[in-house]
Length: 200
Image (cartoon, rainbow, N blue to C red; front, side, top):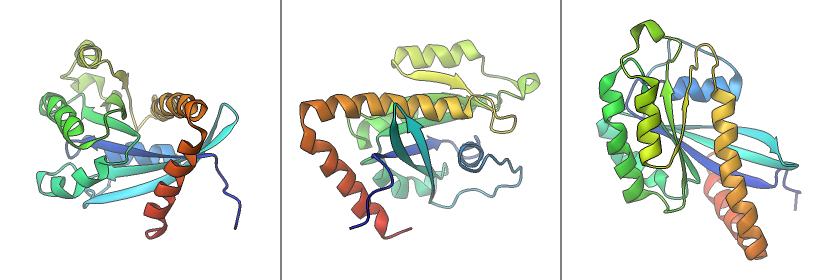
């Protein structure tokens, strides 16, 4: 059997309202590209990127979900098995920030209990059109004990940092699990491989 080219596979999920820039964040991180003409994500899409961390090769499978209501039934099944979730809002759109609490409830209902979470206030390059202050973003993150960053896919602010921080939190958890029960990691990785082999 071919040797695996990575030590861990982490499944990450980008969620948030339609138009907040989830696809742009994903493309900036995976391809270092920015495109202003993305069409809305239909259902679900994913990218793979391998990073090095603490001497380990980590394969990130990043799922980009559609924000529109009509796709929510598709996307809820993707919460299962997600190890990290990024909740994205647009700092120029009040409603997308208000809906963060709704997305957090979705995570509580559908995701694993120990999933790592992070809130991203996207489009921080558009400060002149800002409606949601950074303090408000920090406050909601504090209330839920979640990491928070403001990002810009356009000017590439904090994109790498966000993914690396989330992956680091998951890795820390995995490493402590591995020391408790060595067989656990093998089981988890195999499960993920089975799931992803059909689509890529």
